[in-house]
Image (tube, rainbow, N blue to C red; front, side, top):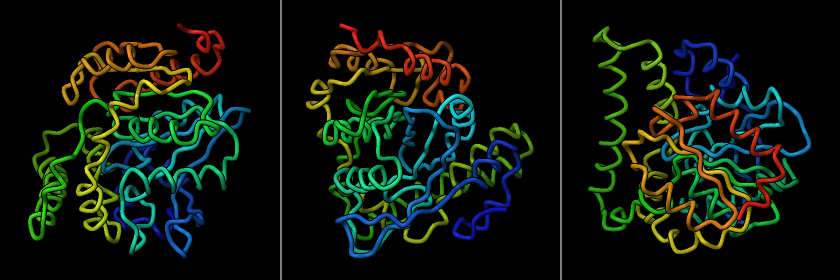
Length: 302
């Protein structure tokens, strides 16, 4: 059974991995300084071990992007995935601005409420930028850092600051329609692989959540993580950088920048992989993350 707070379109999911993760989504009301009312926050937890892994999804996405990776990690490790503030199926509380500062504050109180011990923090794409920002602000909450094709040096939304009504609404609605039409075309054409159709379903499910437009507009106008690049060198946690060598979204140059900037880091190239290794090569990605977490020698990298 699916939780009642999820959009009814969740029943259209077809693949076992998608269905299993969606059926395990829980909701916790997290008290934060951001509002008088606790924020209904969605997450999944599976597995058990002494050092939790916490997965952070990318821009305009949800924890469903970890449907293939999370079970592999949870087979050996306590693994969490959370929907960031303003994204996924987490409540978009009226009166809150959705920006990097509020995202990391909400994430901290989620961690403080439910996890309460240092984590191996894994961020994919925009989730990587969130992970960096969180690590620099709350270093006591992070033991190790994993960046998967991460934003930080590129991929900001600084132009969003110049959007005004009605262009702001039209811009995010155009973004939404691209996903909606992609799903419709894939289903009607009959030429798409079932896995590709399922990926589009998962990527668009959260679009049906209340106040999606308002949260997207708020985040876009914040400029996103456009001011993060100069802070990356301050990271002092052991860091694993996983990067698809065929990333057509960010390219490959940023991977080397991260490795050079972060003192205690290791870069591993994922061959014949694009921007989303957690979906394209989940077994390889899981293997590297688990090995990194186990191998204490990585903490001594120069």
